Image 1 (cartoon, helix red, strand yellow):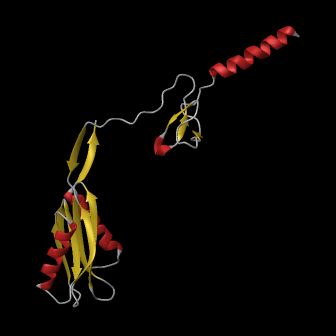
Image 2: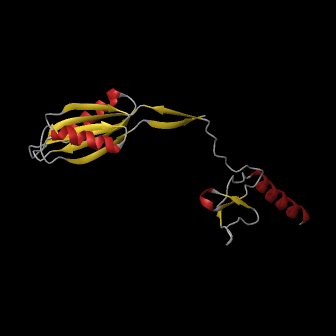
Image 3: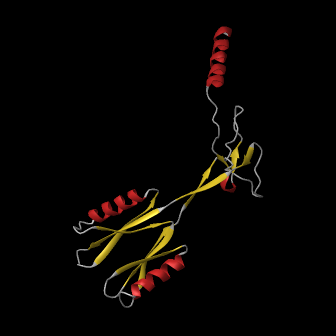
Length: 179
């Protein structure tokens, strides 16, 4: 009997030692005064997390040292819609100009239009689309949304009446972090 108890103890100890301990367990509740209780550490979002078992470390958020910018290309494609009116589609958040053009044309073809034509392409700008009462579509751009709207309305006024901004596209450059 003693040897079977000893063997069962060895099996249980072996199972406990060989099982990998989780790096982080479930989220622990925070105490009413906002501090973390015993066996917990502050976690994301103001909650608490259990301290990792088995010598593990809590995950660290990497410290980003540098930032960089990449160009953002926005392309428009013009077409005549099923009601016979001038219309447009656009593609933004593209890092290559040819891809922006290709996606805009692809989106245009998906409308079923047969007269798709690549329109203007903008780099790192806000773009506003204004339509006149006569149905003409006009674009304008700027470093800020207000500048883009003003430019689109000014251009539209040279081609039609009662212009209204119907779309604002944020085509600003992308900021990303490097290590």
